[in-house]
Image 1 (cartoon, rainbow, N blue to C red):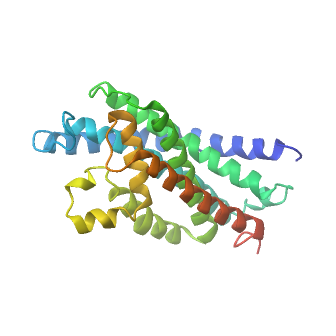
Image 2: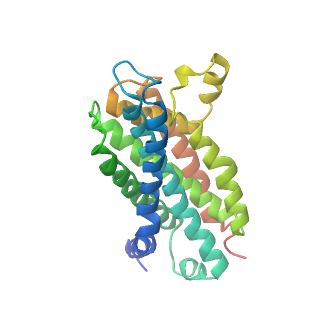
Image 3: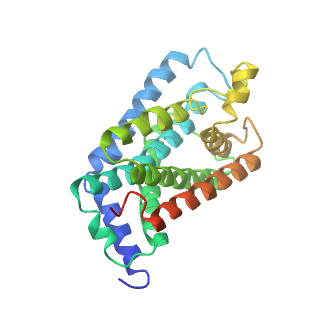
Length: 254
């Protein structure tokens, strides 16, 4: 493989891998998000108002969209790598002269595609019931792409580190899921006691959700430019870590 052919081939393979089972990888997460919206929206829409003039169900939709984007971007790269390790076909990715950036780019870009596909699915389905405005569309796109790239990178790191499905499940259940659910998907951090509000600021996922939601309402818990800078910095750090792991062959070449 020369030039960009290696990157293109691996990227195509990763997109095809999840798209061939899109009923499970795309449709199922959309239905899950709809269930969250139905349950939480019905139970709390008459009792909670987070932003002035914004219904709770409207507040909830961007959080659910972004949560779906993040979780599925992580699932794509992490499941692909661990599956390749266990079945032994990772060797077919390692044998060709692929540069570390090609491997990284293909896995992460495919994760971005899956994350955005699920996010668009959730948005299209919910918009029929809860119309939303677009106060700052560029922030919506920017945070969605950056967020899915970050979680795709995290999934890559987790897939490289894990040696069996149990370890990957622990990474997802004890790190990704808590950080996602405690990032302000279902609430604004302004409603929390001061101590927990400050603790929430330590969660990088909070800035992704808050900045993404700003794109719809023009209102955020913190300055969206600050969120964008933090999210961008977090992405750079994770990308460097993942690239170094790929370049060194850590837990890939035994």
